[in-house]
Image (cartoon, rainbow, N blue to C red; front, side):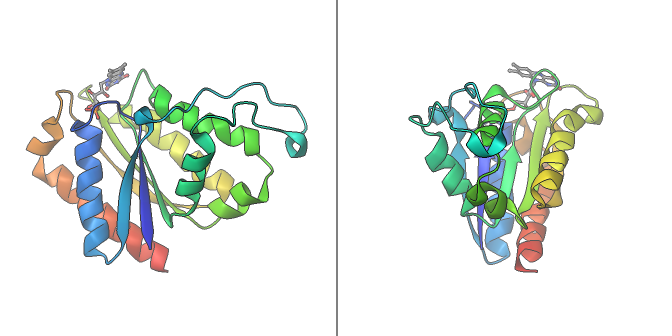
Length: 188
Ligand SMILES: Cc1cc2nc3c(=O)[nH]c(=O)nc-3n(C[C@H](O)[C@H](O)[C@H](O)COP(=O)(O)O)c2cc1C
């Protein structure tokens, strides 16, 4: 069992990163392995023009880091979308990754590769209103349903300053617990 956490924040050591570390501790406690993928370190461009016929689509920007990153994500049993709330949505880094799915929309390696995977979300945000996390968690739930993946849940928290989530041990415990639960779900 292996987990890949897609990190949508450009802040290393930030709140998303801290949540991801705690999640990975839970994954390890459950007897699995995991890794973080910093999308901001990669050259993943916004999707280019795609044709209207799904089966005939090509990725006109396939010369960047996207395809190897997608394949790395597809090898995981557990796929975690870790993104801060940025203006009522996921970060641009995460959105670029997700949009590029549409260049491979009907391809079996994507459709079959996603089926049955365990999805989860890690979502810090600054506004003292837990509803803000919904801007990220609701899309992740829809992505899971689209790919026939299993949505295991999320950990969200109010954290604005860099690393301030580390001052909330109960939130880190929730992330550890979610990591353990994802492994248990993936093991079936
Ligand atoms: C461009 C940008 C947009 C943001 N938009 C929101 C927002 O709409 N709602 C919110 O609650 N916080 C918002 N924030 C705050 C971040 O979600 C928050 O600081 C988060 O903890 C950052 O995570 P990080 O430390 O992993 O980068 C925004 C921050 C930035 C930089």
